[in-house]
Amino acid sequence: MGDHQGYLKHGRVKPHYRPVDERLGDYKEVELLREEEEAKTQASRCMDCGTPFCHANCPLDNFIPEWNDYAYRGKWKEAWESLMLKAVFPEITGRLCPALCEGGCVLAYNDDAVTIRQNELDIIERAFSAGWVKPRLPLKRSGKKVAVIGSGPAGLATADRLNQMGHLVTVFERDAKPGGFLRYGIPDFKLDKAVLDRRIKLMEAEGVVFSCGTEIGKDIQAVDIRSSFDALVLSGGSRACRDLKVPGRELEGVALAVEYLSQSNRRVSGEAQKGPVLDAKGKKVVVIGGGDTGSDCVGTANRQGAASVYQIELLPRPPEKRPESQPWPSFPRLNKTTSSHEEGVTQDFLINTKAFRGKDGKLVGLDCVRVEWDMSGPRPAMKEVPGTEFSVEADMAVLALGFLGAEKSPMTEAFGLEFSPQGGIKADESYMTNQEGIFTAGDMRRGQSLIVWAFQEGQRSAAAVDAWLSKEKGCADGRC
Image 1 (cartoon, rainbow, N blue to C red):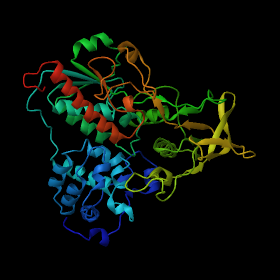
Image 2: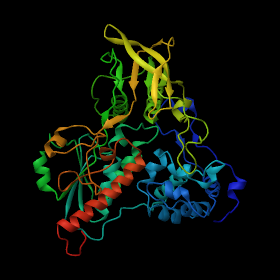
Image 3: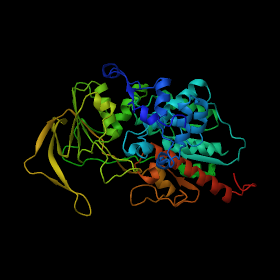
């Protein structure tokens, strides 16, 4: 490393955000790219440690110390080349990844970790600006055709890798545009869709074909797609939402987060709307769920002009510092204040929603009670605290409660797929389902998870498909 004392000279600098008053007036990205000198200074904090746990914690096995060193020296092209040895769409992980790597940073043992996520973003955006990122055309085509069904993170990563292996890849997407949850679930203020479109265009230039507005089992029969392709990879995500089955759930004004965020994103992009209009303007909004999706709902509601936003969570508030139960180098689950929280919200924890109250079929409030958790048994046990019942006025409630697994759809029924006890599509260690030649990857297989894990799933499922094609289809050189 160029500066062995960089971590002693410089502290960690937090991300720079646009002013709250400015960003609440639009859906442009909140986080600003850093100036070059600050980027180099932050990269200099990498310690050149003997055992880089950041590398071990990264699901993509990124060579983090190497590209940190190049960035510190201002060798941005070398940094980009090192980054791309392992990274999958770093312009996306650089914006959205929770940075599992930073939890394992040796500096994080007793100090603030290196800004690895931002360093990654600095590198890839400078590469795009310099014109280094160009279409990579496979040297040889195998002639084998693979259909990837679903164009979310796992589907895109699978398609990209299979295409680079030389296979002919077509991605089928039931929505009007590719991207899956990246396009319809992540707000533009976190991921500008121009960034996603830039990557899609690059993939198309490399040979990947996207067929949108096409639902397998409905627009194309399962038997037809099976006969037209040598292998199929299902990457439809974990789209079965966890609901809240309490009295009043049917009231107008109560909606799932996926419905709310998807409609907002379509409105921002000018796409046609689906379902009843969900708009927080002038309303008292309650967001139920304290995760990243709940945070996205908070930011969206504030941009729509909500009168107030109240976010409640069933679980306790996470700790501010790493607890003993989550020792370094594991990734600590800490209390997270996002840019959306900074824009205006009241957060409350240990709250259970008992019922939605309505008038004339419309939501007017929530009946809640405070709870506590007993962690002494084999499984955490929740109990209500007597005398703590209270009501909350609300015109709109958004349920951001996570997901239960893959959807049961005409496609899964037509293919005769088996589901795992956890709700995903059942698959073996080679990502193959109970149907020969049909693979699955991402949240559809492993359940609700992070984008970076979906990218890893895409890479590994592509390798499994390639190996199966080589074995089953008799490639002359032993590999397609």
